[in-house]
Image (cartoon, rainbow, N blue to C red; front, top):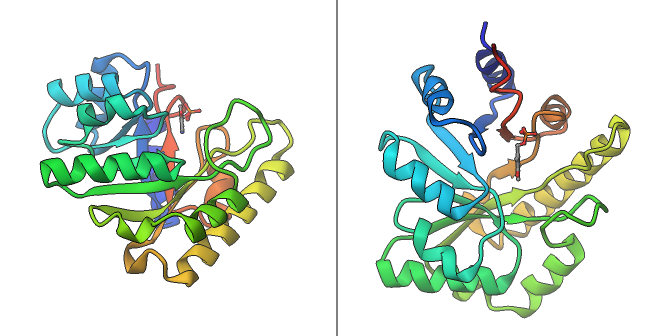
Length: 217
Ligand SMILES: *Cc1c(COP(=O)(O)O)cnc(C)c1O
């Protein structure tokens, strides 16, 4: 069985969606995974997302999982199916403006910073709660907030990552219960190559797996 098929089988056994992270992979390898049936791919750079989208089959759903600057929003908005990496109200507001302009709704996830590692993007949960109470999120009528995304610590101690995933699950449940984002708030995106099994066990329903999928041969 291919590495891809094995990871897909595990995701499916937890009813989780698998997003394959195609960043830095040659186009032929990405197409090989497509041929095996995969339709959700994720990239971390807007330009690369746009390039791949323009040359790959139109039935692929493209997700953005990396930093999005305001001046890059227009590159991806005509086609992107989920922006997983929204970590400020200002960014959500700019996405909403552009969505209005092209009359196409945008699906987003709120990226929460859980790991103490400095390089990670995302908004710490307490600051998100603060923003939800003070910024006019409900005025962003062209945005669907579908859930949250987060990157666990890349440390060798699995118990650290597991407890981060447990905390994220609690944040997800709390936000869902608040009813702020309505019934579409269903996505808990956590788990990458090194920790997707842990993430599944802790309630992830969307994986973002790159290198482990492409390990074959
Ligand atoms: C690169 C990346 C992934 C996938 O990482 P792998 O370790 O290759 O599975 C997942 N999520 C984000 C946000 C990434 O940037």
